[in-house]
Length: 92
Image (tube, rainbow, N blue to C red; front, side, top):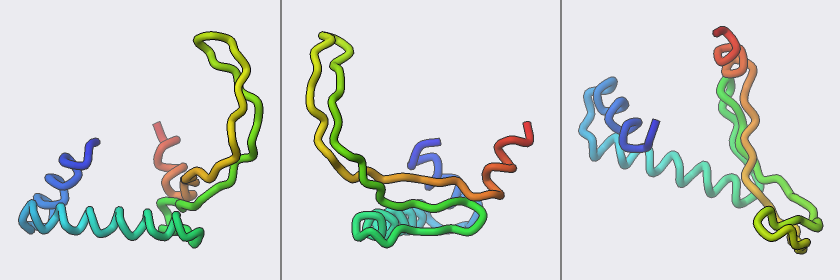
């Protein structure tokens, strides 16, 4: 599902305008991003949690050339699914 499809579904389900649904989604995503960047993270019970993880530097290999290259340490966003979401996905 793309962002535009999500906006459309929220607009239909709540009977609000598409622009109001878009604004709501934009605010939610912005606040989640700010929390991850600041290191606080976000926890949505039953759905999962978003946080920032630190990756150590390492030596990587360019798959195209086979040449070794240094990959610098960095922080990356991380999502851990909640119990309810995991169970829902595994019902199939």
